[in-house]
Length: 279
Image (cartoon, rainbow, N blue to C red; front, top):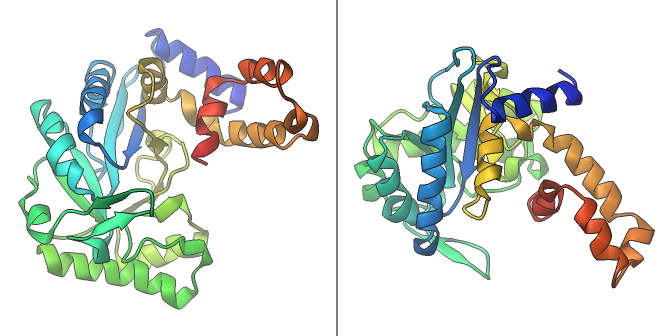
């Protein structure tokens, strides 16, 4: 489906006009106490405009219906404290991808460290609502690791997490969204049922697919942004990234200041500016 068709279908969905069903997987990381209210509002949008589904099962959407799944990378403790209560209130399933060697410890950058859930906290998560997957042992950018290192991160993380939690681990997400065909093959060999990237594609593009795309979600997203993501409108992001880089790397654009630069920025679609810090 070309870009024009994708945008047309997305706009039709936004206004409630029936099209083929779709499934979008939203990808969160941390939900802090001051973000909880905004997160709850986004969940209400999901409940209103989509059918919630689990990512550990191949799901298809009936014609004219949107489906949405919710995932969290890293396994931070604030998932348990802030996100899970809101998910439980709405009976929404979710999946948490855990950094195995960060369990029970602080993880992040110098500017911000967050505590990852402990073994007991992970074990106590309700299995009917929360699926646990692997997010590697140490959270490296896998395309820059050796084959041996990648194998260790992918294969051993599953083994250790299964032993740690005494439950099957069948899902995997790539840190930073970084993957290659060879890394996907290692995941197949490791016995995972599905693996997840951060490419903004529809999961229903291939309901039986092994490597599945997700759409980044932030509590700072506007309600319209959340609605558009659920509608599948963000499938054009890879092309938008390329256009954005071309604009921002333009020498004249970089030299612009004062009146000219803001005027150009106002003409750039909001999503291009918004995602400039995330790609």
